[in-house]
Image (cartoon, rainbow, N blue to C red; front, side):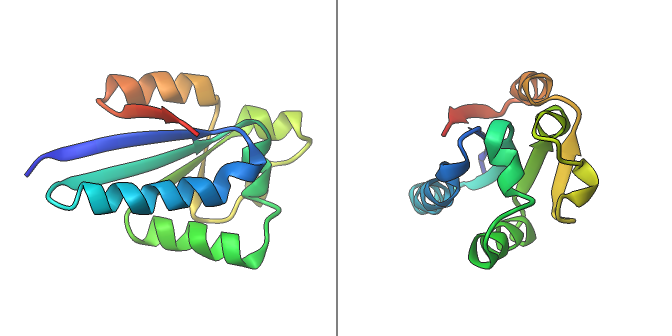
Length: 114
């Protein structure tokens, strides 16, 4: 079975619902292969991981529970005067979003900018 690794980079706080819609669509298309999803949130999007409505928080938690990963840029959080300690347990803080993108691309992730 082929494993497709997809990294979705989100910086815009208003794109979260769109990203989850796109992931659901990609899962339908890729039904014959296993797909590994990682979302990297930086800019204003990472702040949404801390301050969002209950429905979106549940959607994020469900995504992680089903095997996805959500990474939050600590550098962006500091810029927004927020702390990574306030991220939900299901969001993993990474020191720098750009460095993480480079690292994941080197591990074979296909890059998608939301």
